[in-house]
Image (cartoon, rainbow, N blue to C red; front, top):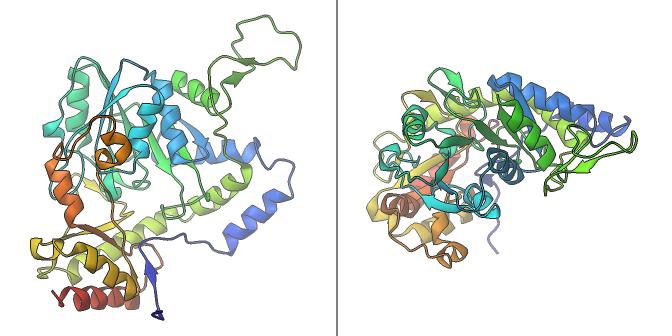
Length: 383
């Protein structure tokens, strides 16, 4: 077995003693779930991005499920998203019986290509993904949605702290709702977790219902039997997050701006290091926005893309924890059983063929970046 003295993953959490103390403290308090830390965390995230309401969930996936439900997506409706995403963005539509359609991506960014959106009379939802933290062209998508009576829910799993058109992703200038994820590789973490932000009170109330079994003590249908009385008004789920997780999230949120700033500095250094290299191209930042750089994707030139499988394995054996984001969703066996076929989104398939994600997280040092460059160039030079 090869011994690796140093290994840099593509992403990881940044936890300090302040975070540990925050979690420990809530464990000695009255509530470790369904308590005040959840509301505090929701309000702080909403305030940070400039939205009116926030509803936290136990994952980004359940948050998307809740958002699509709140919008009223159901059987007979259609939604459009990008194939260059984690499967959850599309799956949440299938959970509700909707038909999922895919729109191809931009060659240089991997973001959904607004010029290729094909909206039908049944399209209720467009779900763009800010891939790698790089904002999509929301205004173009919003113009198309408005012309076709469709709504927008942003998948901002990669984009907490990113900006578009001068405002933070989640400010909802062009959309109904936005989702953020708190998985350990994201900008801040709650272990697992997600949140939906919205400015619409009705969506807010439906989101709260959905994450807690569809149960409420307000706006009752039947007469109240007593103070204990509650009603299940929708077929909801137990998608609740805990106070333990939200205590961690609140502590992490204090450091978010510095985390994003560090990510952007690292990306700037990568850009300089890799300028005009013969092996790969880098993804360009949207000129109308500021990327939060959840990922730093590189795109292999054709000669090297043909050897991606071997290059991936060799880089890992050299201590570089590269990853691939993403296999086009419709190429997954489940989606192919639904009738999707290879060739549907050729630009994304080419993007997948060429893409590797290299280490990107706030605590990377200059020495680490030199290590990344050294290992990349060593492996690529063999081809």
